[in-house]
Image 1 (cartoon, protein in one colour):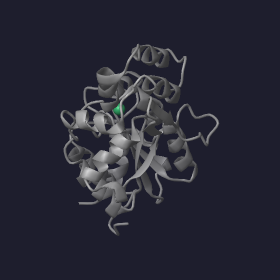
Image 2: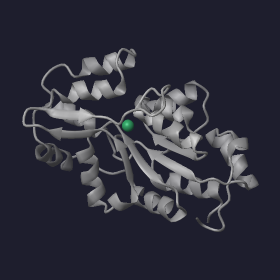
Image 3: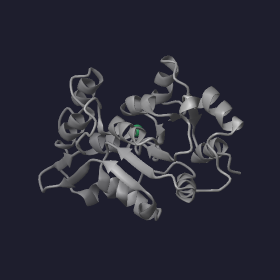
Image 4: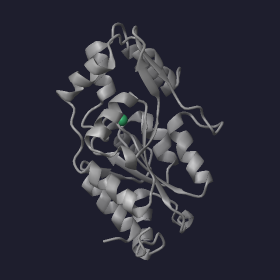
Length: 246
Ligand SMILES: [Mg+2]
């Protein structure tokens, strides 16, 4: 950890309380853990939705509606939707390569977190082989931990399984990981864009939401403090301010 970094300086406390909404009293000298959504957050748009629109055979959108209505879990939604996709991994990657881009300065943020000693997780309900493809392209795999489903094409369809929940009260594997680290005394930074991030973001100590997207709107409507961003350089800058690094 950088010797100059402190979570307790007045500048940090002011920024956290005004901008990001953490309970300042909870900030201690323990380390941060950074959890970051993939689709629409690290990527410029939702690759999972793109794949479903391009390849799913059947009414995949009914499961989104059921998820919104609270009838099924996030994990069940993804399992049911990708059972409608009957193409192999390579074809999916080839199609995404034509359209998907990574939000600016993501690698710099990962390297900053690594240098600071803050574990960086991707928490995603998307396809892990897609995420790993992009992490390999950016040579970031050694610096990032994955907390996502495991997916593969079995010759007929995309099969999906998700991590088992550790905390009984957790709603999905995303907020489950937030709770797990908080119970270890860590402070959790959550970065996301969509409704599937909402519970985890609300639970987290420090929140970043992609500007103009659903997570930002909902956090604002519900009165939660957060920081908006478009470019990961903005996140890095705010985190440096938080940690008093220059
Ligand atoms: Mg997302």
